[in-house]
Image (cartoon, rainbow, N blue to C red; front, side, top):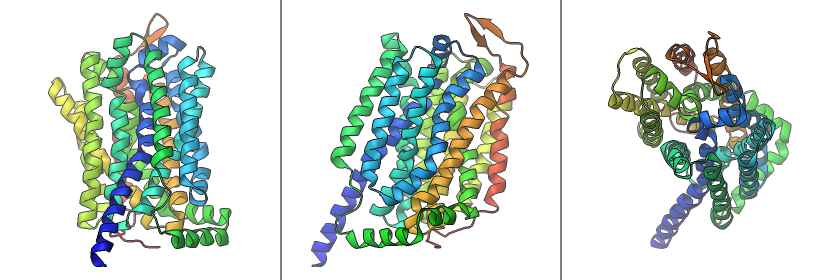
Length: 430
């Protein structure tokens, strides 16, 4: 009997990884959508005649939708089939990507981008909801790191690979058609593979359902929203995540060409390596946190190390290409400490409120996503003395250096926030 039990456990463990990684393919896809602006920034500004503030707003349509939807989505995922919600979200995102691809006016592109953001509001929460049902709590930091790694692989694909495909076709729209097709493939994979829960977990499902039914929607929202630890964790993640939006998603390549005098190709190598750093750092921080049974200490280390690395990038002159690439890798690596806020929040809330509680974390990230890019663009436009070539503004190193001050300021705030986040010792406190 013991041998049979072990075989079943191993089988369920394998299935847990297959199900979780397949669900994470949507997270991978969403990060392509979030970050491809960095690669075709100039082409988009030319196609729609946009300045730095306008492109920031178009980029942020994704986050406007995400911030509006993500909190109700958390409630939906706690109460309804995660697989069905995931299929709906992938469909909405793929349709939005197609609309963006064929758009000829700014308003059409913005609508497509908004739909993509609506679908994206489901992706991370659904992955965490599924993982929390298939894996024990003591493995959640590492599993979360792997889920985030899948996302960062998408961010990586949106850099040099996206640029190479666009260069091959000579048209960013052809690359976006392939991007849309990828969404269809992922939709089919989710339909065929993902399951809400492990086999023989009907009793657990019934218990969660009864808890949620007794509490009601607004009581669940209130429990999650009035827990200050959820907001502290969310703010930490949102500030540590800013380099993903700024350097990986929108301005990284142009920043490196103007402030560090790299070619566009060299700059794309650095932004690609940034995502490699996150890919390495996310499971690494998760593993270390689980191993030492601490959440807050690695978060403190990540904030301090990130501040030191970005200071070197911004203020050490005449950096070589290998140095810039190494610094981008380190920024990606050290900011990966943000993944620890998710298991921390999960451990500070009842299991049946996991999605609702973690949605607060995601709300904070998405609010920063629609506030910071336009703010960065406004700071870039600050001097008001940009050259205009073919209707597109050209920015210099001074413009970028002024706007980049947002990043070290965010890391300082993150460090302060860790003083108030409660240590869980990797155990449920609810």
